[in-house]
Length: 107
Length: 118
Image (cartoon, each protein chain N blue to C red):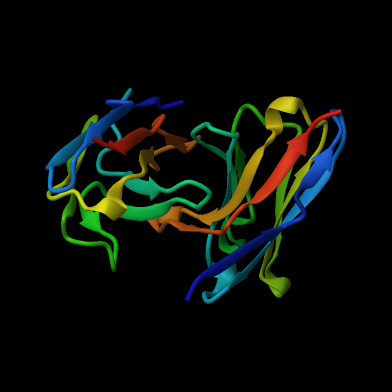
C-alpha cells in the first residue's frame, strides 16, 4: 500500500496567515492526489483534485501543487472558517490511502 | 445535486453482523464506482472498499483490514449501495461514510455510526 505522510500533524496560525501543508507519498502517484477539509462532526469536503485543480465552489485562496511523490496545499490568506483538519488522499492505486491529517488551530 | 444518505448504523456485539445502506440521488448511479470510507472516533480517514460499475462487472476492492469480513454490493435499480459487515471487531467502531471518490470526484454522505461493543 502507498503510505501518505502529511506534515506537520498540527499547528497554530492566525487569520490572514499564509499556510502550507505538505503530503509525501511513499512511491510515485503522478498527479492522482486530492485534498480534503474536515470540520468536527462533518463529512470531508473536497478542495483540490488532480493535485492542483480547484473543486467548483472552493475559494481561490486554496491551491495545490506537486506531482510524483511531493505535494503541497496552500491557503494564501487564512480565514476563520478554514480552521479544520486537512487530509491528502491518493487515488493512483488500491488500496486508496489517506494522510494522517493536519489540524490547523487558532493561535 | 449529488446526495448520499447512509443508514443502518448502531450498536452490535463483537462477532456480530450489520448491514449498512446508502441511498444515492442527483446523478446516474449506475455509471459510477462507489466507495465506503470509515473514521474511528478521534482518528483519521480509512478507505474500506469500492465497487465498480456494471461496465466493469461490479468487481470490488477492499482494504486488507476488512477483506474476507466485509462485502460491498449495489442495486442499480434502487440507486443503492450496501456494506455487509460480518465478524465485527471492537476496532471496526467508526463512522462509516458512503462516498463517490472515482477520479478524485469527492462526494460524501453524512455518515452513520457503528459501535462494536459488548
